[in-house]
Image (cartoon, rainbow, N blue to C red):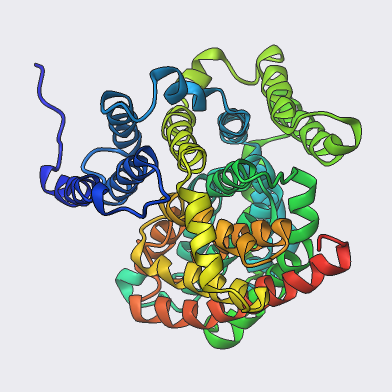
Amino acid sequence: MSHLNPVNYRKLIWPLSCGLILWLAAPLRPSDLSLLGWQMLAIFVSTIIGCITQPIPIAGVAIIGLTCCVLLGVTPIDTAIAGFGDSTVWMIAMAYFLSCGFVKTGLGRRVALVFVKCFGKRTLGLAYALIGVDLVTSPATPSNTARAGGIVFPIIESLAKAYGSDPQQGTQRKIGAFLMMTAFHGNIATSGLFMTAMAPNLVAVALAAALHVNITWTGWLLAALLPGLISLICVPAIIYKLYPPEIKDTPNAQSWAHQELTKMGPMRLPEKFMALIFGLALILWILASLIGLDATLVAFIAVSLLLITGVLSVSDLLHETGAWNTLVWFSILIFMAGQLNHLGFIPWLSAAIGQALHGVNWMWVMAALMLVYFYTHYLFAGATAHVSAMYAAFLGVAISAGAPPMLAALLLGFDGAIFSSTTHYANGPASIMFGPGYVTQATWWRLNFILGGFYLLVWGVGGTLWMHVLGYW
C-alpha cells in the first residue's frame, strides 16, 4: 500500500525564512556586489540551513536548492549540473566502494582482531590497538562513521561485555567508557591525517581548488603527519590519566581475539584480493604526484580491480547508498560554492574583510579564524554542513589578510576534523560512541573541551611550524 514519505515541514521554516529575507534584501546589498551573486548567497544560505535542520535528507535538500538556482534564473541548467562531473566527488564515491569491500570481505574485522590479539594485554594497549585499526582502514574509508560504527564499535561492545562493563548495570567505568572515549578521539586524529579519511576533507579540498589552492593527497598527508602522530600517541595517554578505566589489565582480550580469529579461519581469497588492491591504492596515492597520476583515477583503478576480481559486484556498488547520496549533495554544494566565487560574492567578502583587517598580522587573523571555526561547531550537528558553510569564506579571508594560501587551506582543513571534539552530536562517530551511555554528557563535554584545546595547539600551532619546516610557506 503506497504512502507519503515523511517531511518535517516545521524544519522548513528556518531555511525558507532566511533565504527569503536575504533574497528580498537584494536592493540593500553593497553596490559593488552583483545581483546574481547576492541571489546565489540567498539560495546557498537557505540550502545550508536546510542541510542542518534536515526537513528531508540532505541530498533532497541539495536537489531542491539546485532546482531553485535554475528556476529563479540565477544559473543555467548546464552550469548547475556541472558539479556532478567534479573529480573530487567521484573520488569520494569510489572510496566508499573501497570501504564496502572491507566490510563485505570481513577484512576490516580481521584486522581489528589481529590488533587486539597483538596489543591487547593491557587496557591502554587495547585502546591503541583499536586506534590502529582505524588508522589502517582510514585512507580508503571516507566515512569516519562507517569506520567507527562498522568496524571499531562492535569490537568495543564485545570486549566491554566480556569484562562486565555495562552502563545498564552501572559498570561502564570498568573498561567500556575508556575504550569508547579513546576510540572516538583516535577517529578524530585519523580523520585529520588522511585527505580521504572523511568526506568533509574532500569538501574542503574542492572548495580550496575553487580558490586556486590545489591540495594533493600526499601534500595533505605530509602536512598532517606530525600533528596526527602526536595526537594518536598522546591522546589515549591523556584520556587514561584524566578518565582512567577501573580494569587496567586485559589478558583475556588476546585469547578472545584469538578465538574469534579461529572462528573466521584463514584469510579467504576475497580478503587477500581486498588487501592487495587496498595496498596498491595506497602506494599509487602516495606516488601520484611523482608519476603524474590523478588521485581520483587511482580510486577508479582500485574499484575496477575489485570488480574484475569479483570482490565486489555491480549490485554492491548500486546498493552502496552512502556513496550515491554523497555524490548528489556534494556535487550540488560544490556547484553552489563555485558559483559564489564565480559570481563575485567570495571575492567581495574577502576584499571587504581584508580591508577591515588591514595592518593586522596574518598570523593573528589565522589564529582568530581557527578558533572561531572550531568553536562554532557547537552549533552544528555534523562536519559536512559546517565545512560547506564556512570553509571557503574563511579561506578567502585568510588569503586576503596575507596568509600563505596552502598553509591557510590545510589549517582550516585540519580544523574540520578536530572540531568534532566538542559535543556528543558533533559528527556520526560521536553519536555512535556516546549513544550506548558509557560516557555521560557532562563528562563527554568536559573531556572534549580539554582535548579540544590540545588539538588546537598541536594542529594549529604545531601544524604551522611543521609546515614551515616542510617549506609550505
